[in-house]
Figure 1 (tube, rainbow, N blue to C red):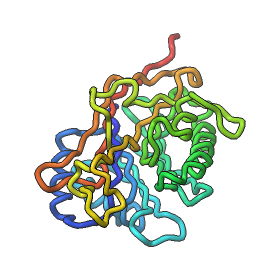
Figure 2: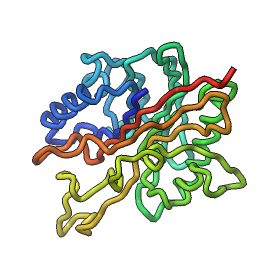
Figure 3: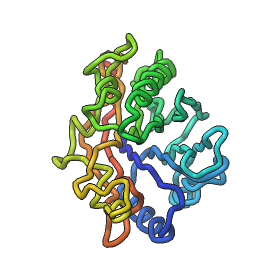
Figure 4: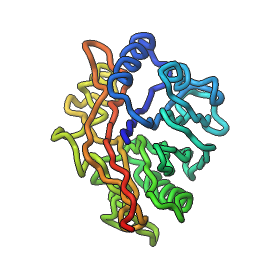
Length: 269
């Protein structure tokens, strides 16, 4: 199972160039399932993900951000396999997640696209509270399943942040502990894994930029796999890499993507 995470960045210009690059790269990478954030649209048939990937064989589940019409808040899951009905979770500080039951061959599992809100580095308390809620929600959805859930998203937090440390089992929050596998930390391609970087042509620093620091680079996009200690089946992370980077003066998005190859294993008889 090949998973791709990407913040799509709506229809920001130069949109035609971004779409051409993205479709070419998605065709080459051929992910089985894609978690997308900042997707413009109104329903499953009328949204960016369906426009971009429907013609190359992807089914899409889309959920607009409740109460908002600006492009940032649409969430989508695209898959080359059957998708069940979507479940949506509105989070306390305005973040949102959607999940769908994905069929991969004879296997089924819950797959979520998540975007906790609090993108300023001063808003870690918001991310912490929303990650606790995300964990409880998705763990409950997958309760009784053989295979653990998979969650991918733009978390706006680096691996040393309390929100990510909580998800990866390194600390508790609000009296709760959990354990998700960070695919890139386990099997990354040897790079630092930055998905938000001044090297991206859409993030180049300027005198008026919020990100004027020429060394502004952070790993804030993730693929998480449910704990092998909590479900009878296992998902093994075989490899992970940062993908969908710039080519010349254009990149698919202001975020780079994260791709992970996963093996789905039954429990021993």
